[in-house]
Length: 479
Image (cartoon, rainbow, N blue to C red; front, side, top):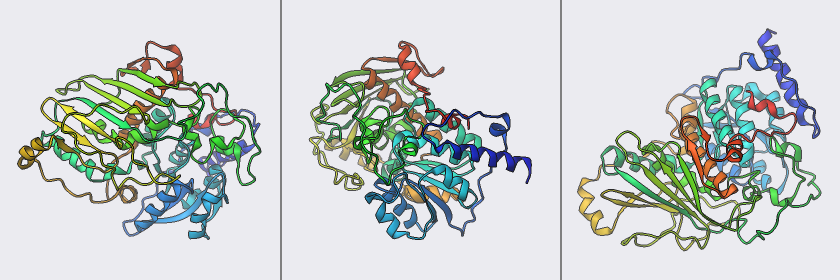
């Protein structure tokens, strides 16, 4: 055994030792953090990608089935902190012989050499540690949106993807569908140009809507289900006593665990505009409306205004985000009917209910106005009379060569490039990280886009990092 292999083994032993709830801080050595890391395996064009899946119920169930359906994935490992719970049973019954783990660190220790890529379909806050360990082990990563809960975690994930030269993809599936290719073609043809304002909206009911906003504490501890490893569920997060209102999707309600409606839907609504208009990071985020502000969970309604500077010959852009069932944005004359995109996957807790205004966006340029939906939904020019006038000038939009899941797997085999790699998805998610901070603190934030610092609020600037991992989980910030 050479010294690099020994250092890696010792590192993994220390990682595994962290599973005790009251673990003492790990002492890092120079050899641990500087040891040569495994390189990604070159997957042959006729091979299947050996895929390990972290999070196998709810959204994870959908993702696993879609990845497997491509014919390019070989499912080699399952990991879920609540293995055997009701929501994990469908996938376990479909793949009864796949090895099972409750701790992702144990999975990598036992099966690392058999894994090419990892699906990370777990709560927002735990995307970071699993993705970081996977990338450091030379594994390609498909992570659900948003990439990470804090601005700094997303920054580290982008750097790790570049450092370890792995394929990455964020799970905003519409980024491989008609909306992506239309927006790209229309931008390149000069149809979409000189954009000055965007209205983005998600006005459907959310899990925390109707909660008592006068509650000023976290919910009390409850008995931990026998199937659940609560310590590993928490990963790097601050310690909380178990409560049913933290798990099975409820984590999205809380600032300590989730990214609210903005993190959930923003990547499906604003992704193409952010990429092809080269928006980057905003210099100002203003919570112009917050209904039911609470320091623990998300508001009942929010209107956030993001200001982006000029980019080359492109004018400044103001993006206004509306969420909340009664916080409906104004729409322009000739907007027409608000239709629910039938291609939007249903949420894990049932069918998406039509809202007064269905999820989408309105894009205002100096000459044209565009109406769009969410996910893969395409844009239309409004009013209808203008659309007819422009019809002969619109470029042909090429079909997608692969859906989002196949795109990732083909990229693992060197046959395509991912369309939502961390280098593209990361800055988009950092926009949402800043928006959530504005919601959380209910205050305007001024942001230095070069230094990546909030300049007018020290508390908010500190929360960009919020590096308060529990004892023993610090190593993931040093990979």
